[in-house]
Each structure stands twice: as structure tokens, then as C-alpha cells.
Length: 254
Image 1 (cartoon, one colour):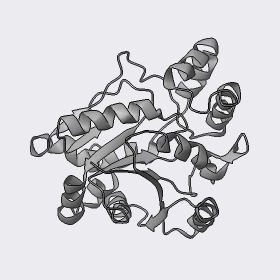
Image 2 (spheres, rainbow, N blue to C red):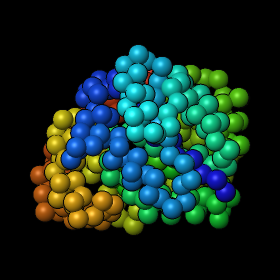
Image 3 (tube, rainbow, N blue to C red):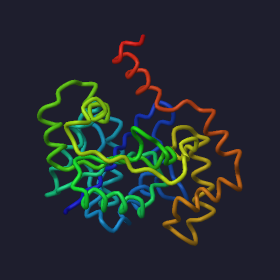
């Protein structure tokens, strides 16, 4: 099975603009993520999915300078952007990842792809309905037929922007798997949403990267055990604000 990993990235972050190109040890955040995802042995190609927003022209130029594949598509139509990007390759499965997750673990990605193949799944994720991984270890895997169905048949803008919501509402239509971690680490945040997150990521990279470019999740957790104030700082920040607001509106709770 051919597998393409597509990293969702854009320059227009509201809380930390331009974060994907902010340097960690001299290389852009998105370069660090691309390196880790590409190290997964079962990933055949890794690319960036940016948007047609003019601010992403800088990201496109950076990708060209690094010889990294990039596709620019709709801002809010996530499914449209990912399906169209996937068509650049002849692939059987597509992994959706986020451009603010510098601690994605190649071994966990390979574990998920193996399960996806062995169980002949339509869809897999690491965050719902049960989250046990830290935020920042999030990804989804779509069988290309599932992604094509979604692209062609599901027209609701909310579902196209937040794809898992359709799977959540229609679980009987798909063979779905929720990958979990042995311990519940959902209270830990490893995404880069704020400057404090970026500074923490830089410290962890500075601690491990010179000796081991592909330090794993357990090593990150070991670092946090030695620096518990970092977890408290992460918990104090609001996350996924736009999604939570739109979800409440869509569910008619406002």
C-alpha cells in the first residue's frame, strides 16, 4: 500500500503568525515536522498542504527552496485541499498531519499505518472519540476511497472543514479505529499555538536534537517529568478556539 503524508500548514495563524517558518535550531518548524514524518518507514512521500491565502506565498517559496512538494488549496475546505493534494501521487492511503506538531513520532506513525493496513480500515485517528496521546501527536489516516467519497459526496461546509465530525456522526458507515496510548496523557500539550509553546519546543530540541535527531515521545515525556512547570503552562492556554466555537454553533448550543 502506497502512503502519502500531507502536513496541513499555513502562515496565517491568529495566535502565532508565521509560526511554521519560525526557526528551531536554525531550521523552520515545518522543516522539523517534515523531517520526523518522512522518517516513518511506511510513508512513501511527505508533502505540505497550504492555502491560497496570499500569506502562504512565502511558505510556497520556502518549500521550493527546500525541494519539498507543496499544494495550495482552499482555506476552509480541508477535505478539498487534502484530496486535491493527494492526487499529485498515486496513493492508497493519506495521512493528515498538522504543521504545529514538532514532536510527531515516526514509530507511532508506522504503528498506525500497520494497523490501518492489517485491519483494512477506512479511517484511523489518534484523538477521538478517546484522546490518550498528548495534543500534538494528532494525525488521521484515510483510505483513498474514503477520502474520495468525502470529497465528492459530503458538501456541508462544517464537515469539510472539520472532517472527523462526519465520522463521529456516521460511525456505522465506515471501518474506524481510534489509536490510543497506554496511559492517559491528554492533559499534556505538545502543539505550538503560542510563543511559550515555541520556546518549550526549542528547549526540548536543544536538549535532544544534537545527539538524536529523531528523539521519541518517551524522551519528550522524560523531559517534561524533569520540567513539570511546562505542562502547567500548557494547560493554562486556550486551544482549538475556532473549532470549539463552530462546534457549539453547529450543535445549536448558543
